[in-house]
Length: 203
Image (cartoon, rainbow, N blue to C red):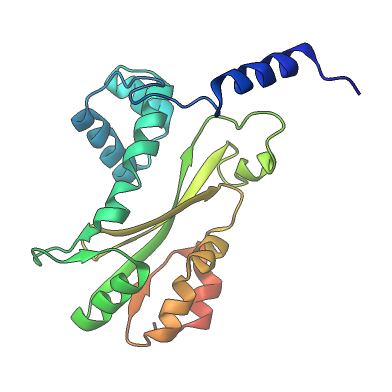
């Protein structure tokens, strides 16, 4: 089969360059919001679970701008670690840290799965249907979060397709394993995690 003209053209350009094209520093789409605004919209998203479209209307910007900001900022707390109330300098960077802290301090955790509406994945993307939430009837991503008794966020898990059940997402994150490893740790969950509550009735 003969190579198409665009493919031949790209091959010729690649040979002329020597190596593949390298993007220069600063290339790519530019953010039209400053860092503090991107941080603020991400914190509101984490706290309220508002969909990107609603946040875009609230802040007078585009939906793609909000989605890009959240995608950029959201991983940062995991790297930095979540601050512990009344414990300056202490950071919870892993799920194991959260359960160890809760067990040591006698804190009752609150575990829940939050769904956020997102734009429909592109046609042809593998697993596209997995984002259609049976509960929300929209394309969503599901995030498992853990907070303390006052609702202060201590940990936020990975974004997963909305069709995944809350309990499946929780087990995938390793929460059931942490409850097994730390029998003195306790948590509150909703009806979506009934199976987990039945497995650990004392916790």
